[in-house]
Amino acid sequence: MVRSLLIRGMLVGFVAGLLVFGFAKVFGEPQVDHAIAFETAMDDAKMKADAAKGIHDMPEPELVSRPMQASFGLLTGVMVYSTAFGGLFALVFAFANGRATNLGPRAVSALLALTGFIAFYMVPNLKYPANPPSVGHPDSITIRTELYFAMMALSIAAMAVAAVLRKRLAPKLGAWEAALIGAAFYVIAVLVVAAILPPINEVPSDFPAVVLWHFRIDSLTMQAIMWAVLGLGFGALTERSFLAKGLYHPRLTPKLVWR
Amino acid sequence: MSDRIIGPDSVSAPIPVREILPWIIFGLVMMLAIYFVGAEEGATSIIKGMYVHEWVHDSRHLLGFPCH
Picture 1 (cartoon, each protein chain N blue to C red):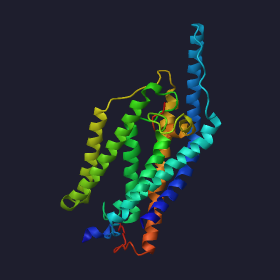
Picture 2 (picture 1 turned 90 degrees about the vertical axis):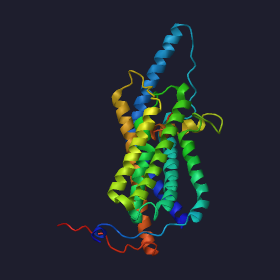
Picture 3 (picture 1 turned 90 degrees about the horizontal axis):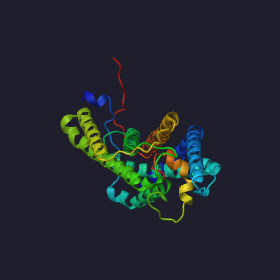
């Protein structure tokens, strides 16, 4: 049971990864190239200034060529990330389905993906946004990584507490009110965390704003594609399989009556 | 019972936790894979050198992880 869910999750994640890669290749890569052009111009200027002072900088050796980074490198990273998230998604679904809500598998999957997108990516990135190359000092990579993962961990923890809260309160207050209180708890918790954690702003003052904007929107879209495919694709396949195996019996077909 | 008209009043039975637990090991493998894409040879390093970092460089930036 868990095994088939896990395999399905990874397969859906793999398909999502292909779509994410396609988007990243067409829309994201040009922004990375713009950012690297800016970085190269800055490095050249620094090298010239140092040479005038009699210091000769050595250019950094290139381990992986740019065309490789932008094609197979990007593909590897995106596919591993997306397939792994598909597997994790399936395991969380295995636990949440039949426990978190009384909704069917399709709706559980969609809600899980929506909350996953918010908790894993959107909220951590509102505090510490995605940055293209040349934004961020190499010296601060440790603290930036620690803060980013701390923000992500606390966001996920707050989302888990919100889900428990919603479930506990639902019988007393009703589904709508309980969901609102859970959501309010999450929003307040991450606002407090974001206010406490220190800000990071290492965008060079003359870095093109349009490149930064497009880069961040492309990063957001990649995640939106991945989570949407996971939530809707995994949900549709799982509901169909559960119905076929008799693991899910909707007693009443949901029907909206328009009056 | 009017509220039952708009929602499915049925749940697929939850999978027992003891059945899910052994599969957590795969969850850890997934997290390790995400670590290699997102953070290896940046803030921390398991493998020496910078090759993994340089290979996944563009995806690390675009997926929102901090990078050099």
